[in-house]
Length: 161
Image 1 (tube, helix red, strand yellow):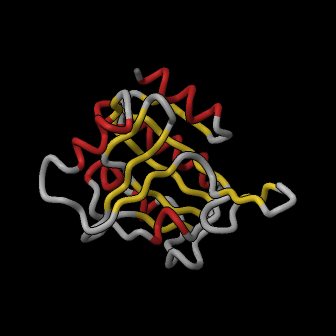
Image 2 (cartoon, helix red, strand yellow):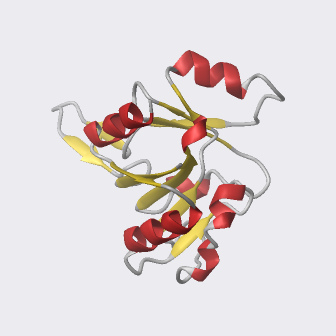
């Protein structure tokens, strides 16, 4: 299922990198950042394990070049990230920077959307949830596709495990 998820992420035009552990995830994120300023979730244990504050200049989401989040669940069939928000998990982190980097555990990958949603609502319902499938994109009446208008232009997913 992990390979299916990574293939779906790539098919949608995003980047998927599979690594064995947090140390390798840190290296992958460092390479993705390429010197960009960053913001990150500090309410996610997997994100915290890569010590993102030491990877470069930390900036507010509105000024950062990259935002690092985790994900509650990932949907293999579509390459979709399911993000919920709360303390230390700002919605702006994955929406405002040009690059959204999601660091996710392989164990959070499920087959389908109904399975992911059932898992999200198995406990206390979140105050907000976003489903992210690739970079932000929109089209006008002439069907001209534009990326990055309502969110990041690029998405990269680092799968740990």
